[in-house]
Length: 314
Image (tube, rainbow, N blue to C red):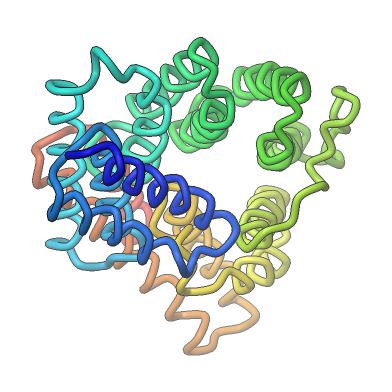
């Protein structure tokens, strides 16, 4: 492949990453353009990210077992190709590939703890090679996976403070925003009867940037805090604000919110026993079953989702 075509693929990959945060509806188009160029012109290092992005697109919001299985196969094949052909000369690509593959796809077939470890590795490599922007995306993912994997909350809080200090140092507003959201949620879970603790890091308010996915993350975090505090109606209110078609629903954060929504609906039904509320628990069980089917398919005993199905069907 010539350098001009390789640069075009790289351009589409970068634009796809930006569009996910700024204009999500353009994400799939840009990813398909990258894959189309690769299929026509040949493969290069940046083609791998295009294929991993493509697998993430197939996973996002997909409720079909075959669709998720195909996406996982494409993602694994792309990562295997990169490790065999490009890893030695293109270490700088690792943070971005780990962010997308382990953050958007691998959690269906790999234990959450393994995904969290990969995100931490992506952060370390990203900082060491100067890819700080992508490194902080890995940091956000690392915190999220640690949370859903059940790591001790105090341990996660310490890690968030470490990442926030670096995010302030590098003036990364996106990382400050998302890490501050997690810090507020985890503080609320630790001090259940108390308001969320103020961030001890001056300037890390997480109130700067506004983009298309900001309201989704904000509503889910508020819902988690409300659920843990026993405010079921409030939790229901915030989760109902999350659009059904949001790309976030296809990621671990979104699937986790669907699970919480299902559990919370049983409490809401005590005062609002309507068909709409009853449908929430059925949707949650359906989502968990689809996710759990991938674990059974690959024969792993990770129990990322199978135990969630059991808890909702008991």
